[in-house]
Amino acid sequence: MTTSTRRWRQPSVLPGFGLSFSFTLAWLTLIVLIPLATIFLKAAGLGWAEFVEVGFSERAMAAYRLSFGTAAAAGLVNAVFGLVVAWVLVRYNFPGKQVVSALVDLPFALPTAVAGIALTALYAPQGWIGRFLEPLGLKVAFTWIGITIALVFIGLPFVVRSVEPVLADLGREVEEAAATLGATRWQTFTRVIFPAIGPALLTGFALAFARGVGEYGSVIFISGNMPGRTEIAPLLIVTQLEQYAYAGATAIAVVMMLASFAVLLLINLIQAASRRRMGA
Amino acid sequence: MSTRATTESPIMRAGLITVALVFLGFFLLLPLLAVFSEALREGAGPFLDALHTPDALAAIRLTLLIAAISVPLNMIFGIAASWAITKFQFPGKALLITLIDLPFSVSPVVSGLIFVLLFGANGLFGAWLAEHDLKIIFAVPGIVLATVFITFPFVARELIPLMLEQGKDDEEAAISLGANGWQTFWHVTLPNIRWGLLYGVLLCNARAMGEFGAVSVVSGHIRGETNTMPLHVEILYNEYDFVGAFAVASLLALLALVTLVAKTVLEWRFGLHAGARH
Image 1 (cartoon, rainbow over the protein chains, first blue to last red):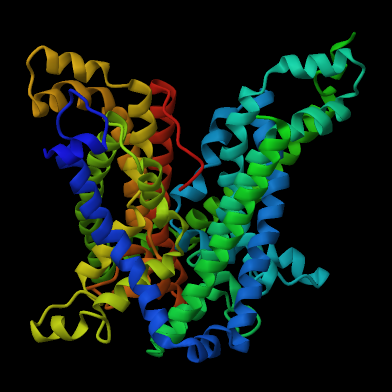
Image 2: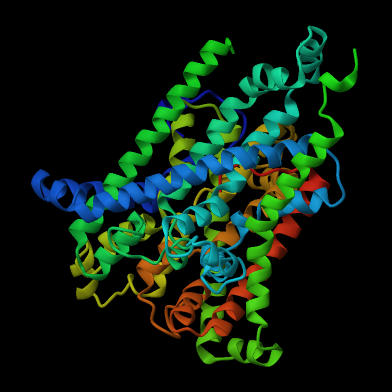
């Protein structure tokens, strides 16, 4: 090991830093950094006018609106029901709780294509659930509602697993103190518990949202894929690629990634601000 | 002071539990049941026949091959990365962890696209590859690359918190007693982290075998050659061979259930836990 590396990191009696660090960096660069850089390089090569033309075409704009809109809707549904699920799993005991808890991770383990065809089987007009909704005039499969349902499935564990540990660590003393001071249970929840778990809930929402924007496998079967109406942005990328329209695919991918990063950055800023306000 | 203000009324409790269970029933349990029920809709015969076609068997073989290549690669990377990150202090560590996590925030489709832009016919290295008669995109190497990219952070993500918690006292003791680096790793570190490693490998494997979007972009969907199980599900489904599609899907759902059970057992016995990101 050279003297410069020794000065750069703190000394340690353990060996293997040079080997493990250089292998990590080399593998990361080869598999992740260079391939990801390619897409920005390719986008830069398009020139501004062409980038805007293909990246912000009417069809692309409709796809962004749909992808970001349904991901936000699904994230909100998950924020509400995910919080209820996390609350029930942390605070209450009921038979089968362990099985229910394990089942929450199903969307992480089930391949997205399997989830996609299963949800379509449920919500198609002749499906298990769809046949009861059809007479009510409610079309789920092949509309934005179906897309949202698929994204609720995919995003649920993000919210539950983000909120659960924070809720479990929350000391009961603060709740007892609030009660002693005369707060009702609802006041304690809105004034004491919710502010404490708020950041974790927001993190869960952000993770579910980010995953939902990029989700492909679980959505394409239930979405119907009509350009301008039920065509999500990742599908538009695939369609462009199949037509060898590499410029279009690249521009749309870059717009999507930048928009996602912007949303995640915004959420991080909100969280940092709320932590400062909480004095933590 | 009654307990009423520090807990919910029994009615409220029952209500919340019901809401949670109904929600999970509709969104998680029903889709799972639908997979098996649709697969067995026409009985066991057609189900088994659907799995016994040459294309289905080829897809199963390819999926196993892809996992057998990409999971060990990410396992070695995960161990190396967590060794460097948890046993040493150096500036830029937070940035390194963020970069390792990067594939989690990229759409699967984009994860495939980047390799098409690099190695596809019109890609950066496309001409060079064609000249040397090498095929990456629409071939097995492309599927492996996309899968390795998608599952890149899995093992490292599980090992880093575990190894941070364990500290480096054991390793320092081994070194001061005269063990060399490899001996320390094999006899001290590896036994310490083996269950966490298995946990990470399990999650990595489930994703590697189930990945759809990224693989779909680079595979070219050549039956019997570049069709993985999830892609085969899509092809059968689009051909209205629903029993076939759900039969192959049920194998993947079984894999998911086995993964969940093994994961839960590891969590109970060894206090391991996954982060919220997968």
